[in-house]
Each structure stands twice: as C-alpha cells, then as structure tokens.
Amino acid sequence: MSTRTLFLAWQDNEPSKAWFPVGRLDADVERSFYRFRYIGGAKRAQEEVGFPLLIEFPDLNGDYQSAELFPLFQNRVMNRARPDFTDYLHSLDLTEEADPIEILSTNGGHRVTDSYEVFPKIEKDDTGSFSCRFFLRGWRYIKDQIGRLKHGEELHVTLVLTNPATGLTVQIQTEDYCMIGWAPRYLVADLVAAMAEGPSRYEAKVVRINPQKQRVLIEMRGCWSKHEPMSGEDFKPLVN
Image 1 (tube, rainbow, N blue to C red):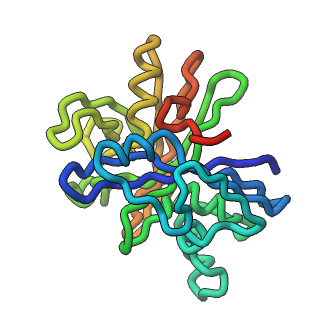
Image 2: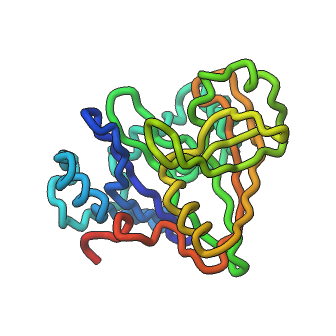
C-alpha cells in the first residue's frame, strides 16, 4: 500500500472561530513509517490568531518521523480491544481490516477535549475524478428532515455564498432541494477554485445513517479536469 496523506486542522476558539489546516501526516502503514510536518496554514494561523504549536511537535520547521503512529493521531482511533469496536467500524462503513489511517480518514479524529480535526488529502484518478467521505455537519438543526433520509439516497451539492457565520459554505440538499446540512469547511476552497475554472459537476449520496453523534455519512463525487486539490500555500509543508 502506498503512502497516504492526512491533514490536521485547528479551530481558533476565540474570537474568530476560524479553521486552519496546520499539519500534514504522511503514512505508510505496511512499512511502519509516519512523518509529520507543519504546513503553510500553521504559519498563517500563528500570524493571524496566535496558533499554539503542539507539545508533541514543538518546532514549526521540524521534520518528525516515527515507526509508530504519533499519539496525537493514535489517540483519535478507538482501541480495538473495546467490545464495541466492530460496531464502531460499521458506523464508519469500514471492515475489520481497516487500519488507523482509514479510520481517521472517515471519523475526522474528533475529540471533545481539543479543537483539532483530521481529514484526508483528496486524490484524483487519471480522468480527474475524485470521491471523498465525510459526516454531515449541522444536521441537528433539521432533525425531522434527517429522519426521512434513506441509505443510498442521492443528494445535491450546492455552493452558498452568503452564510452569515462563514461566508462561503458547501450545502448538502435532498433530491427535492431541502437543505439537510453542510460539508466540512476544508472542502470549500477547492470547490470554489474548481468552479472558477469552468462548469463542474458534483454528486453526493447517503452512505450510512447512524443513531449516534456522527449520524449521516456522505460520499461526494466529482471531476476536476485542471484543478489540483489541496495544493495551495496553506497545504504546502514548511520543510521538504
């Protein structure tokens, strides 16, 4: 299995509530090789809102390598010894063979004790097509509509320019155009950039509906003929 890339995002609690991509994890599970570096978003977050470097990674220009997954990421994956681990994988639409990187790519690495989030680097195939999965945001405000969703249901992806809190957002709608929530903010910049190059088509569908906090798992598909996802200055490592 080739190297896979995850990004670490951080939210400023006060006063901006802004999200910044701050770190990059490159992982080769078969070779037991893991590498973490800060990226341009960390430097921007420091300059704009005073982003505090992680205790585990104290040097902004450090190149951290390990034969084991760093605790910052490992602690965001449920222990396989737990009796509910199989149910947990099922809620993520993963099998027993899923490794920690696959789990983090889907679960987002959420913890109530900090303001970090994990997300995978979007990769295109030779035709420019891509797909990504994420849990729907904001569904608590429209629970009645969520209760009517069905597994495999096709959804619409819409770019909204006037969200009062964040400006640009990626809105998810049902087939009859009822809003049910939002995609993660880390997708917004790439969708905007791709649309600026020309007409783009995006599709989404319901993969799983869970009873717990991470309730609706969405798969989004699209095609970017020219745009290279997650290639802007915020995503570039500060050391090569």
